[in-house]
Length: 212
Image 1: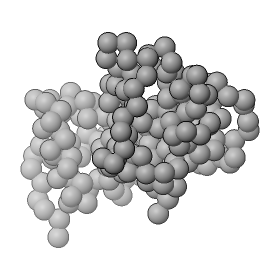
Image 2: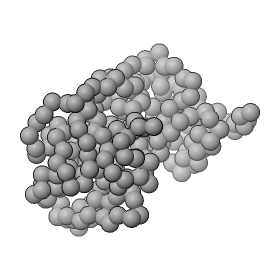
Image 3: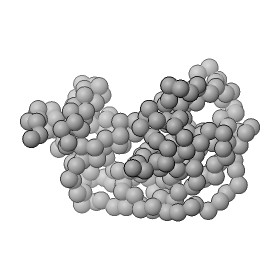
Image 4: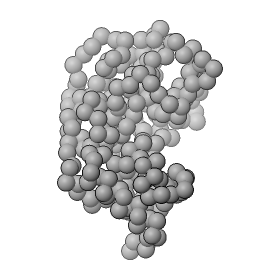
């Protein structure tokens, strides 16, 4: 039996449903904060965790629009074809849109719902190799859905090209004093630090398709 929700949690659920009906993708935590007149994003996050625990939503907490309302069928629900470009792993070249490697055709194309593409029509996907992001719930064999971008904010999960190596790796991005730190989500692995001019952002993660 599901727990009785507080008025704030009821308001959040209603807002998420209305947002899904009006858009092709879910709201961000900040959207919910403003839309429900909540004091801070931490209060939103606390209530989202309760809603997830009680089975009202599914959520990818490390993705900005990673909320799915269980049992909700939006009148605008649609699927977008997403090309899949190979695998991504540290130390190996990856052929993706905009990367400094030879262009290749996508391996396949998947039809994904809007909440996994962030409503972006130019989204693409790559398959993860290895365990470097396992603590962010991105496992070997998963597909990460990305949108092309050359910019990133600190903490975002990105596909970053190491220019002098022509390699692309999946990591959390941090910039400080002209240095870029590419940080794995795995306590057994060390961050990689490069001069900013040797790093080019090629994509930002907006969703994850689990392999199991």
